[in-house]
Image (cartoon, rainbow, N blue to C red):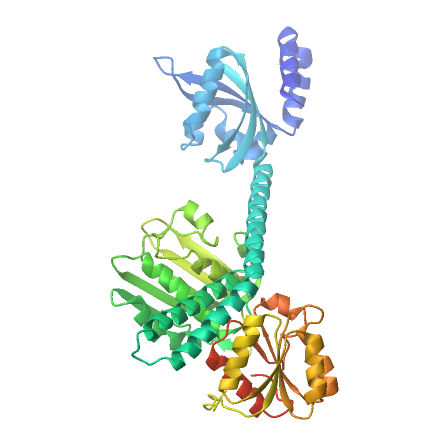
Length: 533
């Protein structure tokens, strides 16, 4: 029943009290909404200072948890000592003006959110109808939070798509710059006038390649090689390097978990996570401070996943990085993992460090928890699904490879600049190089030189026929021929073409001259049918 119905019943009661007393009491006690009658208390100056409970219905008791026998006759300040002034001020104005009030408000004292309709019933008394909308408000906030997360995810996905889309062209151009710079350095006198300039070109190309790698890590699209990894052992090996990176003004504490912390992850990604988090922490402590790195194994329950949308229940290995730096406010934390968002001054950061960490962690089905307050430091907790089995045995260190060769190779690449520079690299190392600018031309070369051909080096994405299809047709002509795939495209795009599978040899552009020749020599010297390393 609405408040108007109650008012009508009360008006009838004043006309003929006895016949309607039972009906009124039935309505008062059986209605599902909370109902209370109060008396306002004013001070000598006429200001409202408190109000007294005159009667409440059972629904009021159920909704608020207040026992009617313990509150009727008492003032609200006696019942709820921490009552917000809002309630007294609002009801005081209602009693003075006689104008009904309709509003929503949260009672911190009761921990509930109410929709309230209040009416004056006499010069100093008023009646209130309460509807508990706490759950509705909670659901609305949850919907709003999920919508914000969805909008953020879509924005991150769009930027990730952009990063993946430009990576191919960037990587091809960087490969040309890097390879030509490296070969030029080999030809220039060490102390000649141009050696330093070309060295700077090579260094800039390497930094640009690293930046492209960060974009791909953010986009969760860089090629990775996950393997069983024990975090205590791996992180322990990084501590000395991190101390040098952080400098003497930063104290670094390493606190490994007493038990093994096993995960399935590419070791280089753990390096990226720790380096980015530690550099970020260092930059938050301009006058020095302390960083603590810890590992642990934790069980995440369903209830723990409410604040982290990417979290799912289960067992996780964790890396926690805590600093004593300046901390962050809520607004900064909300944008923390956005690419190119940074609070650092110009030239001190790209804004990709934490975005890279987020991309890596998400790519490994993990999530990140952040706790921070201005002036009280920051804690990043990275959680990666746990692997209970022990780590795989360490592979023996590869022996130094002599990268010179005499074999005949077929190089297939639709980008003329890449084709030219890769051919020059291989010829410098003694190989006989056949070239093809497209797959059909490559097949003609295979038919003409099948007897002497030892290795196919091919781009993955080409017009008309992709590298995987070309390799299958070439192997039909030359059974057992070895293949090296190369590409500047992102990992997910390459995977759709059947390249990033176990046992397949692959090199990501941009590659250095040394990596390219070493990989080729390793493939040629390996046992036929051996898995890719």
